[in-house]
Length: 243
Image (tube, rainbow, N blue to C red; front, top):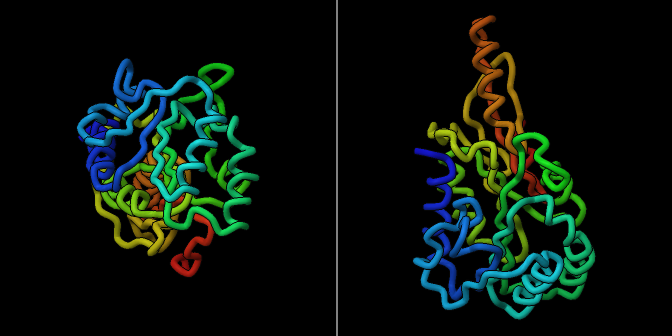
């Protein structure tokens, strides 16, 4: 299974389960399909699928407006860098929504690529989504494995309120990691894939691939078992899971 192809399939499957979603973004059902991320999105069947211009600040504001009205907005963005244009909404608009107890029945979901292949130009150098999330205390999920595509994505689409799902561009042409985890925290803040009495690597963002390499190197050289726990940014992570 290839990473991007499988994630696209799971996205379409989950979108079909959302009640009357308002889906918008650039090149959603034409052109590049956001580098293949939104391919076959017309099969979702929503009558609200809109290709939008390059005005991320306005689009993020519209998403929050739909959520306040009780709707379900889903915004596909090209990459994380452009979301810096929406920081005012993430911090101030979202805080106002929380303070006024608005949008409880609605949702706004942002789905995007993270350019994590190294420096690719002046607008492709921001790849730490945790920094963005910590500004306004909202949950983000980074899909690294097949299990996460199957289960974290399902959890993400069921959530009310605002949250972000991110895809690692560096992994697009890789085979997706298919091993099932040993255990997980209830909120998917931590997912344990390997256990190790000697060393445990806790990885975030899209570092899981590198954790696997480090695990292999250490075990080859020392004959000791290395554990790996993958983490997502959640507002109140289940810290007790790590004990």
